[in-house]
Amino acid sequence: MAKFDSPIYVTRPDFPPLEDFNEYLKKIWENKILTNNGPFHQELEHALTEYLGVKYISLFSNGTLALITALQTLRITGEVITTPFSFVATSHSLWWNGIKPVFVDIENDSFNLDPQRIEAAITPKTTAIMPVHVYGNPCNLDAIRKISETYGLKVIYDAAHAFGVKKRDDSVLNMGDLSILSFHATKVFNTVEGGAIVCHDEKTKMQIDHLKNFGFTDELTVVAPGINAKMNEIQSAYGLLLLKNIDSAIEKRSLVAQKYRGLLKDVKGIRCLYDIKGIRHNYSYFPILVDQNHYPMTRDDLYGLLKKNNIFGRRYFFPLISNFPTYNGLDSSRPENLPVATMVAKQVLCLPIYPALDLSDVEKICDIIIRQV
Ligand SMILES: *Cc1c(COP(=O)(O)O)cnc(C)c1O
Image (tube, rainbow, N blue to C red; front, side):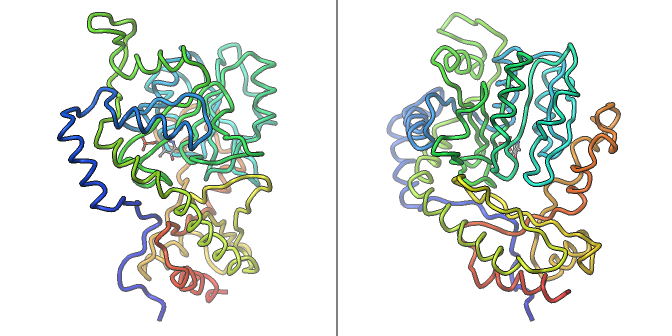
């Protein structure tokens, strides 16, 4: 039947051609520079500002350190309003800065932070908002900007899913005070491990560059308690090679997403997240919601059934961040405060999507889902 002989995972990392990577490694061996803003690092920063359509970018060894450093850059303290429907690193970055996360519920259609509920969560201690462009779908940018202006709050977007995403031809990374990216192996664009902060002016870019290198501004001067979060030359070279083919990789992802949508659109109890018009998407994930009142089994049963067939979906994001022991004692973590996020976390299942996934395999996966009805 449809069972796969070898496992199909939710994602499969992109690799650059080995011969090309060998060439770049040779250059690194010749340059004798391994890290600390080397030539590949500089070239990748430049290439990414061009590709993404942003002014300044600072590369990091991973996205979590980029988040932590972004909060340090803006000297954020007190309370920050954020979403429970994300990867734990979003809230962990607050925790590592001694900041209290205040969870606000998400929208039922985009699964992003619901701007209508933000104001009620603002207290005298609130200093910033940290929204996430979940699955690469842009947040309600205008509404969040208005709130931040009214209350004098900073906005740091966790844009780990939003590589290359544009709204009306402008990068979503140009919104807010800072945006962070993740280049982890599982993301649309990867440098094995890696990340970045996007900012809008040269002074901030310099501050970020100092903070990711212990606070050094020159050989003898340390201006701040920085950290070591630098991207190295091997990671940068890897990224440069993948960037050459990123558009075709995203195009292949879009074909996979279209195939899923076409096949699943009329299945009772299965809801696909649809593309918002006017957005250049990156198809980083393909989430479905399984409504057990209309579909013959629960999300967890479908997850298990697919697994038996060698298909490994992921329940992103379940459990909610607010349910982990670090956070579940917070007042804002109560499920009554987060009804939409609680429902979505119970129903969501991300299906396999990556450039090398065959459309015939998508058909086989959908066949299993459809056959249960
Ligand atoms: C992947 C991810 C991160 C963390 O990035 P790393 O590079 O793995 O440290 C942060 N936030 C979100 C939403 C992510 O998906």
